[in-house]
Length: 254
Image 1 (spheres, rainbow, N blue to C red):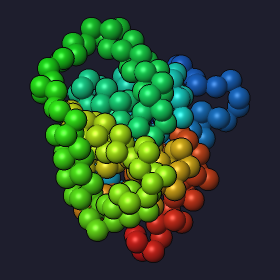
Image 2: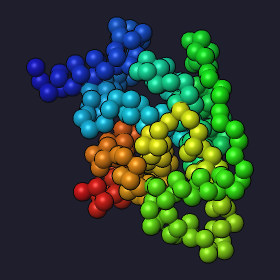
Image 3: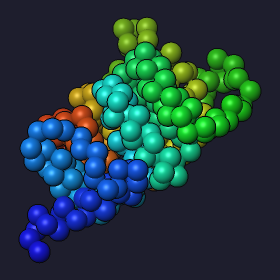
Image 4: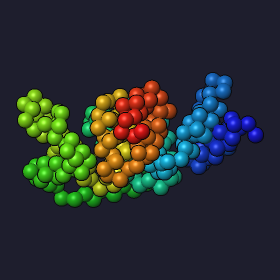
């Protein structure tokens, strides 16, 4: 068996696990000759089967990247695969909601709508219980607590500096609704939200990936898991942005 044969076999097994309805291979993704084989080998055999990050975590990163760059047809396909893997509908919704902090709330709404169509097709019930709403002062305190847990001494540096009269026009809102409201919503653990942040910042080519990639180590992710979270975005939002993110984090993760 050649190395490519091995990759292809691994990729076919992974595709069958994620997309059991297409396991017989009768539904090609493209009419371009060789394209499906390349995807099977490079993406499902080469990326999805890498060690260092669990399969559910790889799915979280994939959904975050696809939602961030609004690849909605693929997001729907992988939403179905996420359900097959055991991700809860609430977790999938929360990924779609969180990326709105980074990509804009309309991106969340489009992603949530794509996921909702999958849930409806599969007759999946969505729990609607949430904690009672917190006051704005409470949201500020909750957000600042998350920032300290994530960023430590870096929580109040750069554009987060409280004495910056320019960034303070916006940043208090980000603390309340980003860190305070969204990071406290049920459905995702803190380490999972760190994965969403790292994947989304990578997909969107934003410099915050350097800050959050380092901060992810403070909430339970290993250096290998951060690296693999970035690698996982490559097929879905571009290998070049993933390489740039890995380059920015090289000193921290080396």
